Length: 270
Ligand SMILES: Nc1ncnc2c1ncn2[C@@H]1O[C@H](COP(=O)(O)OP(=O)(O)O)[C@@H](O)[C@H]1O
Ligand SMILES: [Mg+2]
Image (cartoon, rainbow, N blue to C red; front, side, top):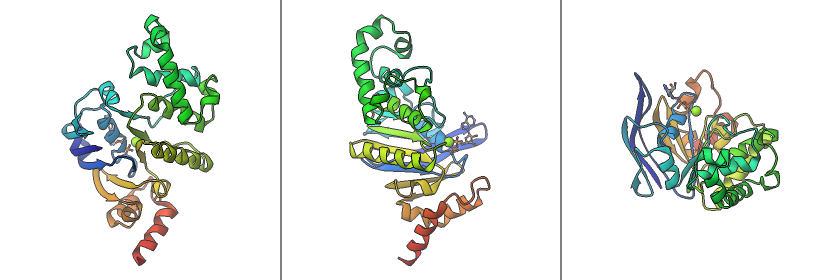
């Protein structure tokens, strides 16, 4: 569905992403993991058109999207959430979802916010699109609450609804579970699975390996801007290069977690 080839970007002398070749398969959950600073968010920024790559190509559904601006990438069917919450807390949950929908309709973000004439003409569709997205994330009953009044998990769902309201085929989630407690994380993982059952393809960035062990179909491991491993959770968790990267990372040593460790032990007896 999404193929990247030799993808790279340099900030000054820093190769944030370097020569990454990868394939995100339709109908699957692909996790991009790696220690902090590995280049995971930058990888998403490249795919979604926020950054222009220094090298390489990106193809989506057979078409080259390498240097398309963000709104064209969204229009082709790729939507994303951000690592830090970017919802409008002083707007309602529905208004937030409608902003996502704007990207695909004629009126733009500011029309949506300022409710100009064009917004009024397109308003019905945008409202329906926003409500449909809220239903997908289980927030329809909260549509008219202020987004800022929701829990951390609720606000994450609003962020996902904003992305879903552009009706993407591929959804990129950057650390969706950041700041959540274990129970909220379990709920979020269930939501992601539901979305994929409903036909969506999901790629998500996470630095805690244990968190994606039970969720991802495919894992791509990044370290120092490069892809160092890929495969099923069982495959990557017993990959020496992956273990080395996680143990060698001071700030996040041991975050492979128990799932990673036990999977690893099991795999070595297989
Ligand atoms: N806009 C930018 N300008 C300069 N350096 C950047 C920029 N964005 C990311 N980087 C650098 O790229 C590297 C990878 O960052 P990032 O992709 O955010 O890592 P991750 O998401 O894996 O924690 C880091 O060294 C970071 O400082
Ligand atoms: Mg990041």
